[in-house]
Image (cartoon, helix red, strand yellow):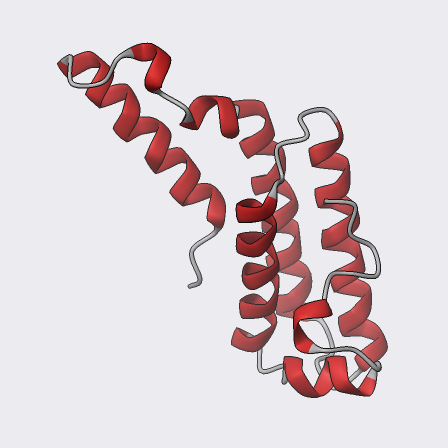
Length: 131
């Protein structure tokens, strides 16, 4: 299974919490919880879990169906990000790569899909993305 970006975010928060507890990191130097607040991370995780379920049952031979799953996950991530504004360049790249990887794992040729739609592979999420 492809690891969600939220796993890395939570791990970084836990590592910094442990460093603070050990006295090796000053609390004001702990940035992870500021970048990925728990409520934001939970919201993103919920959207990604739904995406994984959608991709597991989508007709991968139908461009329209696959594009619809991409639109759904991107719009969901837009909504998750509205309150926090936490999706910046690094997160955007991680999330876009994850969306691509889940499709690839389901047997979708993402390069061909995007090309048929008149896009470059790196533009998979661009049509709906606010982040």
